[in-house]
Image 1: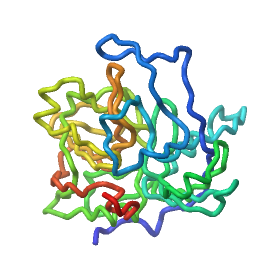
Image 2 (image 1 turned 180 degrees about the vertical axis):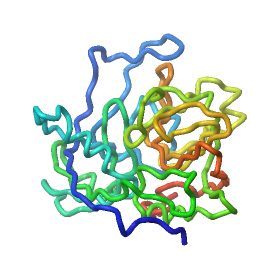
Image 3 (image 1 turned 90 degrees about the vertical axis):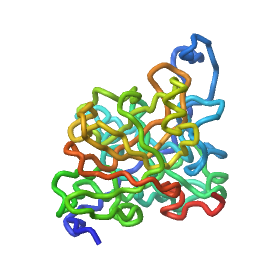
Image 4 (image 1 turned 90 degrees about the horizontal axis):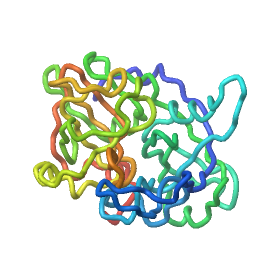
Length: 296
């Protein structure tokens, strides 16, 4: 097993409520081809889109699988500090518990974070989705911030519950770490989300507008919850292009029609020195790794 500092990590409560879908000033999204489109987007309880399902092919734009939560508490001292804490402290693989409404007591799993809208995404079983209501409270037992790989100082870990790290089961290869992924992706097609100065919340998007690149890298079969490796991408202190660097993240929302956007990726591992070896594994998806579904 990998040596970590798990015994030094703090487990702390954060809470959000099931967020309503929202639209901006216009109901239209303008596609990269210049076509106005009206589509489902962020927020809500998504009954028929979960981790393990395709990330592409839906009549949708930025749809978040499962349940989207946010904290609307507004402390004047910190602005939206409570929602920032929810987004930063929640980690992929954390246990989430419904604490109000008809689904009270039901448990789910954090599967990602969506920047811009600043939502935390939680997977629940279908029978729980049917009992949930917009505004229901969901407690996340946040655990994982500060996680380190003690024998791999050139690899940073972020946004990850230690039990999800254990489920991924990366393999040491000398001073590198072999990590299972479903796809490798060139940094050249990464879009919205660049420019952030930290990667402990949010995501950035895989642009899928170039057909030749999609075919070359086999990206049409991306699934929500897939682990993917982004080549020449360093996420140590924000998201930048750095030749030879490798980052691994999880696909958190569906494809998009708007320019610069696509399936979003929340960071899990990064190495500015290229100490991560991606290993292709079609089962490198959170739905399989954490046994969230038996039908895929």
